[in-house]
Every structure is written in structure tokens, then in C-alpha cells.
Length: 176
Image (tube, rainbow, N blue to C red):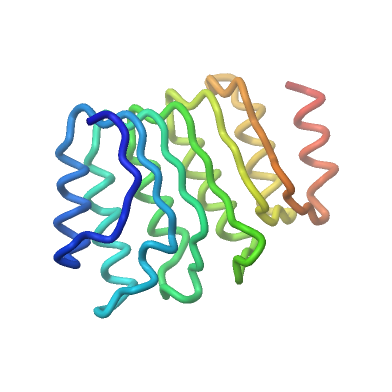
């Protein structure tokens, strides 16, 4: 298969599931809805991190969509997921967002994802849905936009909120 929408594994073994995805050499598109982790009986943090640790081994994923992650509920940091994202060497398109009911959406989550994307040599498209962008996040995004080695062609910011960093982001866009 070349496309996978992640659902909870029948046996509850998230680590094995992640490693199976990591070993797949034909998977082009991976979509992970954070709500699929809601029914975890064991430690959510360990399961989420083990899953993404396995996914990070994949060499074929070109498009990744992550949405509806309630990092506070899982007890997992955006950094641990962003670390896995940064290892996806074939990544060309990335989406990261929340629905209207999402709880804690802070600047740190988006900032870590943008830092991860800056290490993606083939990234052409990045989309953010209902993210919060503060000063530090806008600074990271500006750096990505101004990087002469970046292949980024499309940046979509859907229903995002901006703090004091909007001027920095505006300037980076005008210079790009």
C-alpha cells in the first residue's frame, strides 16, 4: 500500500505498529489523527513515543499529516514527535493542525515542528491548521522561509493565530 490512515492497532502494540510503518518501503502518505491514541490503557506517552520512534525509520514517506494531538493529555512533548519528523528524509509535504475542540495549543508545539521541517531537505509544502504562532515560532518560520537551501514552495497557514511575531513573519515573506 502507498497510503495509510493510522488507527489503533488491534493488539494495542503501538511500538510494533510504528516499526512496521518504519520498515515499509512503499508508503508515500501517512495520516495520524491524535485521537486514535485516546483509548490507550497503558502509558500514553510511552506508546506515542514508541510509535513515532518506529515511524522515524521510514525512508519512503513523502507526505505526513498530523492532527488533533492533545499533547497535555498524552504527557508527550511536541519535541519527541518533531524529532521523529526530522528523520523522515523523503518528506515533501507536511500538515500539522488541530480541530476547534483541541485543548492546549501553544507556540512550542508549532515551533518544534517547524524546526524539524527545517531539517527536511526535500520539503516543498507545509500546512498548519489552527496553530498558535508566537514570537519564537514566527522567528523559526522566518528562518525557514529565508533559508536559501529550502525547497519550500507552498506555506499555508489556515486559521492560525499570531502573537508579537507577525511582523517578523511578514518581513520574511516580503523578502522571500
